[in-house]
Length: 107
Image (cartoon, rainbow, N blue to C red; front, side, top):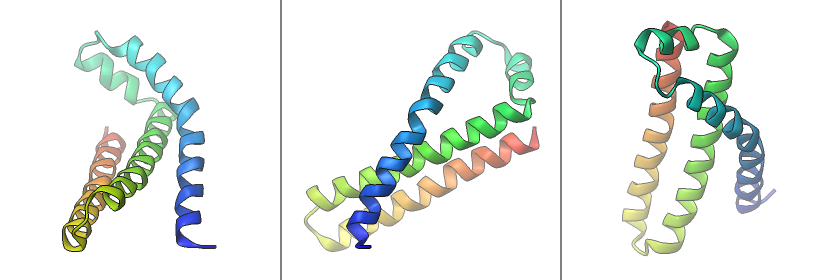
């Protein structure tokens, strides 16, 4: 399979996974929006909510990484700058969800 086809297919799969997780996130975000810190911690003590939020983060950042790299491909002409932008985006796209998931596990 060609790299572009694989990237396109991964974007479509990530967006398909992201749709139900986005509904779950919005519904739960509304319920915890005005909560205090202890209620928020209580919310994330439930294992199923940790798992769903982790899956949401992974799907969202996968979708973000692939779509932003396509934008870089289309709009950044200089190859060196494009490479740096892609590598920084990839680093932060892995580091931020990983750090968040580790923090959730430690709760």
